[in-house]
Image 1 (cartoon, rainbow, N blue to C red):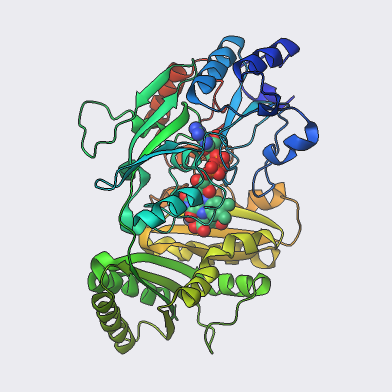
Image 2 (image 1 turned 60 degrees about the vertical axis):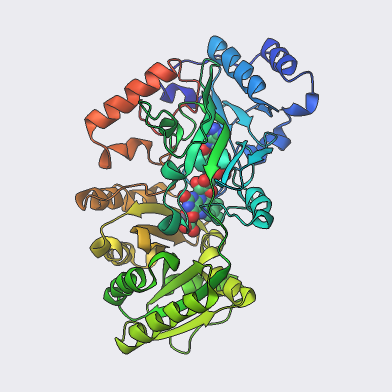
Length: 475
Ligand code: FAD
Ligand code: 2HG
Ligand code: ZN
């Protein structure tokens, strides 16, 4: 069994455990999944890279049931993996071995919305798109957005501290989450349900759960601050022939567009070629320059926003910062431009096995690493670079035509990529998290005293290590 990998000992599920879970779940048989075939998709991640061997999935309907399940598992030393939409990209949401899967999908009620403060309170299993659709007619929107919005859940987003394309404008979840409810490993329900914008009463405990990937507790409720939905949106696709122009464009976008700048996303030519291979999209420009920026403005005054955008576009053309460009003011053309950026991950998945690195790097090394990796791997792989360049977050993706992940390829990439990132004081995870993939590489981004403190927290909050074992921290 894989279990010998960890120093912690867990018990095997038995019939008595199943009876106990049935009784906690009010004898609703459909809330327990035990059939091997039905468990397949929950045992495997979005990329089909990580596989678990869970024999049981539980679907609690409320916090009390989550609490009873955890209390029982803690006493019996049964390990669990909290699972949201299972769209995570670092193997954090699937069992390492035969842990129980705790699915949050039935806890999907939106409880309350305050139209003055914009604070929304809901259960952790609410799907991101569901919240977006709920807020839209109320004139509000979610302060973050990701390609996985149709499946990912708020609890999963918060547990991974998801970033995405709106972080540039609205900031991270560490600022936008005002409160939450979490169930600790021993079943204690921790009420951190504040809806206050300001609260400086000692340690800000909710922050511990933001980005801890289900290792410190199960998030059951969430309060988020939501901004008014912009009414005037413009999207431009701009082409550059050097990365130095990309950097200058970013400075100009920030200074000339200011608060209406809502996205500044980067793609290299490899991404455009890739997307054109798999999506029904047309070559955007007559030439094929090396770099592409998707720039979005969002505001509330169409005339003012367009004036600002036009001034910016005139300036960058005059300065030769862009070699071609197109602007879309209607939603159909805007969504076509967004497809170039939003279908990259899905298109990569169609090419074969994909090795993903989600890095924060100083802007001068942002694209250098992509070129270094191309030289290093030669014809063995297709290396593409894209990402949230406005946040200095590179998505380095390396794909190989064979479907199977190979140790040989991993050894060519790792630890090289992590060493490079660490040498330049970057982060080995900008937004996807550590999960199973990077737990043994955490030291490239965290000092040993930080890792010691993280272990101390884990050991005191979950002494039996029943929550998401083998994830985030190397034990
Ligand atoms: P899961 O994948 O189910 O779980 C992720 C982690 O959170 C696991 O460790 C799990 O144990 C834990 N977890 C889940 N729910 C809870 C809970 N209620 N309580 C405690 N722990 C829990 N990420 C970005 O940051 N930015 C992007 O732009 C982005 N784009 C993406 C695009 C695509 C197409 C895909 C497939 C993924 C993308 N991601 C992105 C990855 C991102 O981490 C996830 O999409 C999302 O945040 C995970 O939510 P989920 O509900 O699917 O969580
Ligand atoms: C994105 O920004 C996601 O599109 C996914 O974070 C990145 O596929 C990836 O590497
Ligand atoms: Zn991203």
